[in-house]
Image (cartoon, rainbow, N blue to C red; front, side, top):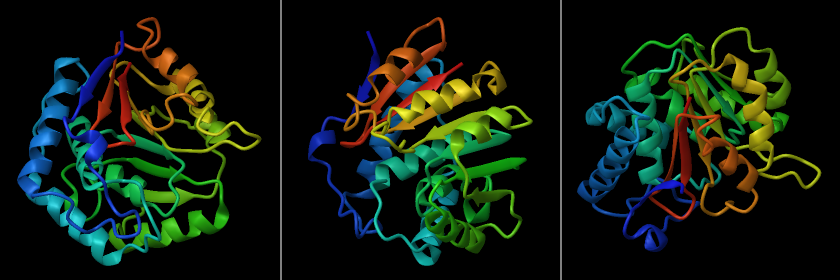
Length: 247
């Protein structure tokens, strides 16, 4: 049976995708839901603890709202906080994100190590976006927050890139769409290409675990198999959801 965390109001929690910076609920409610999600991940053995710097996260959020060009996004305020918090807790030396569109989901992960929300030092934070025009915009956005280029976006196909990545992959974020009708099913291809570079304790976050559950059925079966991953939790703070798994 899959482990699941569900916010009690996940199906009634809605954001205007064209106005992602507008408040959806009181900040205290957002924090409480995220705290419960992080506690579920800790209880499953995916996270070592649940502590992250709330002030640094808000500094990150303000910078993104002020500097990023975001035509639309499905990353809700709850999800933004969860992604930042997971990275702030895990502190991945190398984080790869596949399918980053305008860079908002990428920086929700990478912002724990670069920019005003930085709480640790990373070696490589790499976003992969196969559409050149979107990769260019994402890279422009990221450069406004990270002058160091530790975080960067490349206009490349994720599958061959991760297969040839020369170092460990400590956190892998999946939000790509495959062509030829593959859709979100491409997640499993990307993951399988990454596995031999993912040591024990590496974390994988897959977006759309709820609204694309059917397309992700083979991926979800794979990460929930204890022969492949030590633990996996379907985290449902909103109608999109993420599957969070640890090696």
